[in-house]
Length: 143
Picture: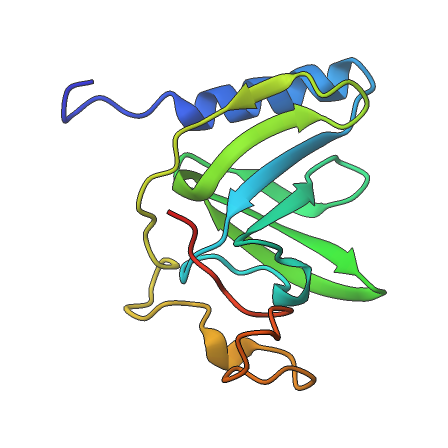
């Protein structure tokens, strides 16, 4: 890929999202959570989160070239979700498992900010960030 050529990844994500939707399947993405990902940290396991990006599960879904953004409900609360496309490792149909995996690359911070959008300070109050046995809510970068 030349330096001026855009990545095929966001186009493939949109195409597979459309394919799932057209066939009555529920599209899900797997995201490697990093400091530039806004997701409910309580649902992150082993440094990743799987998100339902079906039209019935999301509000204001935007599958952009650099970012995937939407609102979704987790445990009854509406959450704003922000995922750099670079952090998406797979998209698949929940019902069949059909989909595609992707290479994960370094992601960029949320537009308009110079600082990461998630950190260990965002952990839920019921965890101790100094206790290595307390994984729930912690960001763990998997390389």
